[in-house]
Image 1: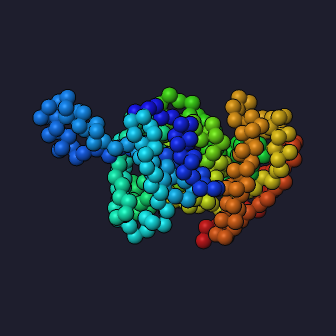
Image 2: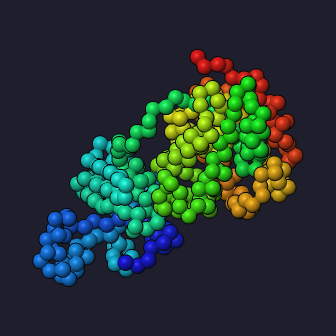
Image 3: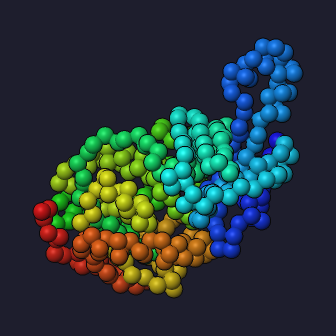
Length: 358
């Protein structure tokens, strides 16, 4: 098999994408004869058996875009031999099944005109685990997920604003001072994500998940719904390690970042207030260049191109969170931030406290 990396895979998909279609996830999978057939072939003659199994094994690249699932059948040299697209609506009511174990993800599509079966293993490629999980979730949203232990919802406030607006300094100051007479814990998701990415290995995270996190940070992208398990793991570890309990207040910074995450986070926290730090692009650049919040030292993601990418992502994906929470009746506060605004100036805007739990 020709070496497959992210760049070469993206190039293979590019000719087969529609205008405006974006490749979000991909994975390399294979279809082999049944294990009993493989064992029988090996028993009859080891070398010929290996050759026959190799000839009968089919290789695929499967991509999830913002519109479709696209399956590329590839040969031993990595050349595309067949393209099979599936509209996401084709899976509604169709005979599809997926399963994800500790190592393998299996996908089966029983659409008569274009059936598909494959298995995806992390050993095939470092990006395979998160990619296969995202693809499986898109194909079979009914797939069972491992249920998390039931827990009481923790009260939280969400700090919302573009990169460099001062969310982290504000969160740290709220933790130091407390808010509304409550003990506060600042959960800086970006900081926690960068800490995980810097590790060679981390308990509870697969090597493929760590590679995925590094890739997301490098591209200035967001964790999508299908990989929320990574964010959930980080959040749960923070809550446990800091001893956050009933009556405490979580100060959420960087999670959720889009409406899909907001729905998932709703299983852990009850958002009681959203604070938006309003800051235009010019002010963002000035704040970052002067380190106005004293929180940018050592940051490798403050290159101007990446900052601009983050601003575009914020406008498209994160800003709609305001409408999402307003529709749920959550109190929202908008505070304009200048190049010199400091955390204590912002805290004054957070009174009065939200209404008590009904």
